[in-house]
Length: 381
Image (tube, rainbow, N blue to C red; front, side, top):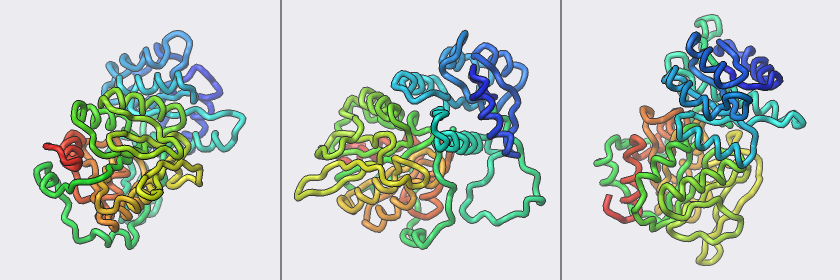
């Protein structure tokens, strides 16, 4: 279901989605109340919901849409303003699954990127029975062999998963740990912690840091979450308030300090560099990696080069394979990689990439990540 008061925006989305055989548009609506009424008549797997609409706006409609159809995945669509970023974060706290920045009509590249994100997000968030398998080793099947399942569709995405390279052999003899008890027995004391996330990441990060509230952070923590500008500013503020510690967007040239959480700002890769005995944040706008800027791979490469075996990397929910190449560098440097398990992911893409490449030393539910971080920092889990 597509919900937007602008006929132009609805038309753009419809035109893009109608080219995808796996996606079916079951309804459109011009405001929140119309969407609720329509959803009562026609169930939808995914609702793309505008924030600013006359009558009932998106944030007001969100709880009623979820009450009407609890299984629906809601993607909030908004312009890139600080106000809308704040509203989108509130919407995700209320149950929205993801967000979708609207394009500027004056920039054709933004419009094409909007199409790509919209299609990839809908496919990734589709019910598992109708979702294409992201398996690395999936055999090719002639198009005529199977009829594509349709997704009733009513979002910033990463590249399709690639087949494993020789990187998979780096940790090929590692038996992954699947229980918290096993993992805690193998967690080393570290000097830095890195976290990579995308779709479903804001909620996962807030849950993770909420579980760490009141516990001292004794090492620096670095986060790359796929988000545009303004959104990362708001997310950093929410994380800081949730955990009760300093969390802010990394600033170019600032010195890294223990106990501080650094979030990659939207549209910038965040890396670190060592100058003498001091480590500093560096920001750049090098080309996107895995269609992402910020991307987790450059962050992980730079952290591994400095912290080596004293780096713990956690890969959380997200589309695509961003973080897999960086995780291989972490493993080669002696560091440890932990992946979120499929059952607790909104989208099992990024974690699956490191699991299938045999880079993950532990595979755990989201609610078991906080004890791992606590143990890694040298505190009682």
